[in-house]
Image 1 (tube, rainbow, N blue to C red):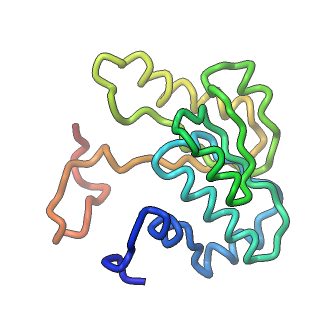
Image 2 (cartoon, rainbow, N blue to C red):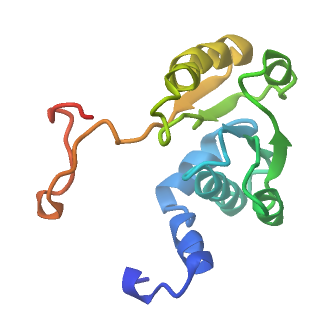
Length: 170
């Protein structure tokens, strides 16, 4: 589908969460359930839905779990409508983190990216302290850390995007 023909957010979400043959093949080989931490952010719903769709296409029965505080109205219901289980959790609360189900595959998406001015302590906790807590609590799970490219400066569109050798900003 051409991007200029996408009519609305629902159609965009459908396109973005459509798994490629390679994703379907990978999810077909993956053993066990999959949990997405920080699933209430920008990319979480899309990745969780893609995992659900790929697992279904590969005919692999598995639980796909989305964990977040769920402050966005309607997000839990939308995830559930896609066949994704939801768990409300403040990941910085050790007791809540300890109560999460143990699954073999965890995608770590939690981070603080915006509104960080004056929130340096919370930014540090979310982006530095919390990943360590998650690794301690959820071992021996396989963890994938998904992070933003916001550490790189803006570049002209014609250049094709930032590369690892670009200086870090801001």
